[in-house]
Amino acid sequence: MKKHLLISIVLLMAVLGANAQSKYSNEFLSLGIGARGLAMANTMCAISDDVTAAYWNPAGLSRMDKKYQLSLMHAEYFAGVAKYDYAGIGFKIDDRSNVALSYIRFGVDNIMNTTELIDAQGNVDYDRISYFSASDNALLLSYAYNFEKVPGLALGANAKIIYRNIGKFAHAWGFGLDFGLQYNHKGWQAGAMLRDGTSTFNAWSYQLTDQIIDVFQQTGNEIPENELELTMPSLMLGAGKYVELGKGFNATFALGLDCTFDGKRNTLIKSNVLSMDPHFGMEFGYKKIVALRAGIGNFQQEPDFDGKKKTTLQINLGVGVCIKNIVSIDYAFTDLGDISIAQYSHIISLKVAIDRFKKQ
Image (tube, rainbow, N blue to C red; front, side, top):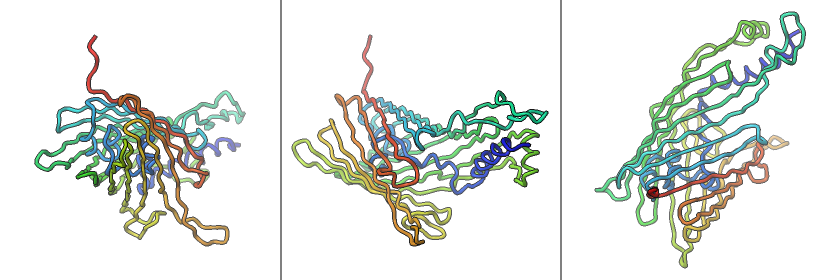
C-alpha cells in the first residue's frame, strides 16, 4: 500500500543516518576551493597567498598582493547532480592585517519528495509530488596578521558558521574555529592549519510528520532524534618551494599532509588512531600571465576482483590565465580517467584583484 512512500523514506533515512556519523561530519569542507588549488591536488596549506587562503590556511591572507580581491567558483559533481559553489572577498586593512568573508555551498536540488504520493484513500496522486533540496552551507569570517619582528611569519584564524538542511525534514546549525600559520623564507614556504581546532558542532533538529514516523515504525527503522554532532580537529601540514627559472619562467612545487585523529580511514598511511593523506602539486608559469598545473593525491587501497588490494590515486590537471594582473581565470580537470567511482569534473574559478576603485 505504501510502496512508493517506503522508497522515499528509505532514501531519506540513508541521508539522516549519515548525519549521525561524526567521523565524516561537515565533509563538504574538505573538498577544496578554487581551480588552482584543486588542480594542484589541494597542496595549498603552505603556498596559498590570495583570498582563497581563507579556506586553505587563513594565515595566507597576509600575502595578498592587492587591497581588494574577489573570487568565485562553480563545480558540478556526479554528472551534474551535485552543485558546488564558492564566493569569497578579501580586504587588506593595512600592511599587517587582512580580513576575508567566504561562502561555500554543496547541494543537491530538485529531489523528488514522494512521501505524500498516496492520499488518505490509498490512491496514487502524482500531483502530490513535491521537490526539496539537501544542502550544506558554510560562512567563514577570516583574519590574518603578519609579524614585523619575524619577517615571513603570519598567523590567521577562521570563525565559521555552518547551516545544513534536508528540505523540511531536518536542519542543523553549527559553529567552529580554524587556526593557521605560515612561514616564508627565500622561496621556501611552510604552513600548518588546525581545522576545527575547537571541534565544530552541528545541532540537528528533525521535523518528521506523523505519517513518516508511522512508516519508520512499521519498517523497523530508528526514529531520529535531535542531537549534537561534533567534527573532530584535524591538522593540515604543507611545504612548498618557489623557483625562478629565468627569462620570466618560474615553478612552484608543493606537498601537503592531511592528518585526522578520528580513527582509521582509507588513506595511504593509517592506524587505529591517526590517518595521514599525502598529496603533491606543481605549477609552471610564465611571468604572471599563464600557468600550467598538475597534482596527485587521494591515495587509497581498493580491493581487486581477486580480493587483493591495490593502491589507486587521483590525477588532476589545470591551467590559469591572468589578464593585466587584475583578472585571473583558472581551470581544473579532476579525477582524470574516472579513476574513482565518481565522474570527473570540470572546474572554473575567477579572481579579480585591484588596489583601488576608479573615482567617478
